Image (cartoon, rainbow, N blue to C red):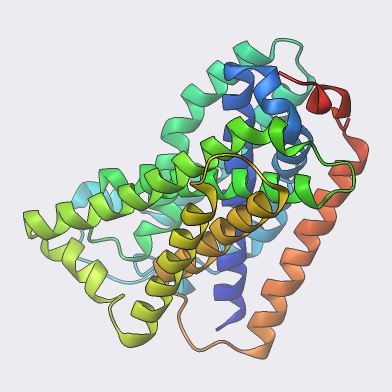
Length: 316
């Protein structure tokens, strides 16, 4: 795995957690502050790490030809898609996605009208997440365009962000009581089931419609290594669902279910991204080092943000 591939994987991973956390925060504000309170500090801190994406993404802007086949070589893409995937336009869109998401994060944190900001933000983020999923992920194999892919990928990021926030909350010494997290546990279970179904529905559509380019996308992920990775990811998600399904909430159950959902997200994302080349010590070190940097930024944001402990401990 090259340095470029390592940075690319980390960029997509932390972008998903940061943007997914912003979406969870907005949904929480629209539903009710009471529902959001137990994990509000966690999702705010994760969303506030958004500026780190500029640091990780800047080197990638100079190495696009190592990541995307439509840069620097002749392709037989349809004219409109070829124009859409021109390097200059691609970089302008990517910068726009990051600037809008970062601006929405700071607006939502500082405004006193969080419901209004959340409504506007979700309306903007819906197309942004869909186009970003195509640009940053699906365009690595640009001959297949799926309108469902953006929704499936974005939904997976929201599920991972919610699972991560729940896990971090329960690992804190002053975590919310399990009974206070009932609605969040049900939300995580629902999103987990919906995530599995959405990815499966996309596969069924490609299979039944006999779409050659879509079938090729799946065939390139059907060698023994990738099938093992895919099987592992769905076994992890099955474990998460089995832990979360029983009625009632326990601390151990919430920790186990959210951790398994996060592990599913990591393995399934690797299956989707298909990093090129065998893992190397340098590439692995870059991945781990950047993840550590993101964790440090997250912890720093947690320390400077309000804990919302009073709202989180209040009974419904």
